[in-house]
Image (cartoon, rainbow, N blue to C red; front, top):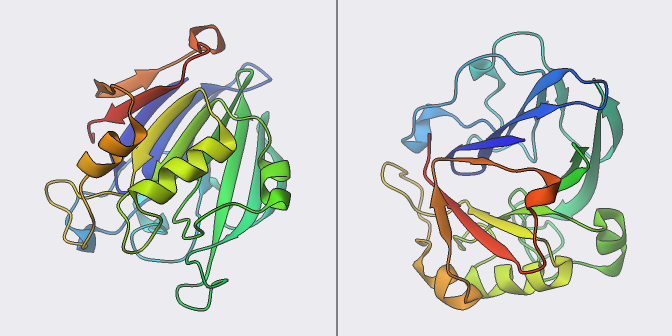
Length: 216
């Protein structure tokens, strides 16, 4: 599996499906109005966590992708995908609405993308649906999502092998967010920094790894 980050909550996953087919999965493509250049190119599957402009720009995607934009269980092109209902705030969605957490099962690994999670902790029912996770993509920039301390609490609830922080302030983003510094202090794990992250199940160790990605 090869993971590329385009900034905000947008990731591209290049995977080999259960049928041996090469599949491109795009998560949360954003609009240029946030200050970054939207990702371009074909995708086989697009996941949308919620309908805000920095997460739902389908116009940037070419081809005829299978689009998932809500909770449920899906089997698309040999890739298992589960969407779990959650909230964009800690007031049961009364401030910013709902958010879908996605669990992607492929290459004998499970990837969890939390979207714009705003809950300070996950409910037992959500944790049961999420299950054991290898790679966790978690928002850490606060203000519109969980902050650094809350992100660490969520990480401790899920206990993944790899954590990839997202949705924080980087050069070019014109949305008010916190930088990653406080999260890295709070999580207390020396991060690995990379442009692209290629990983196999055998690469995953017992100790949790934090991977900070440079945007594409």
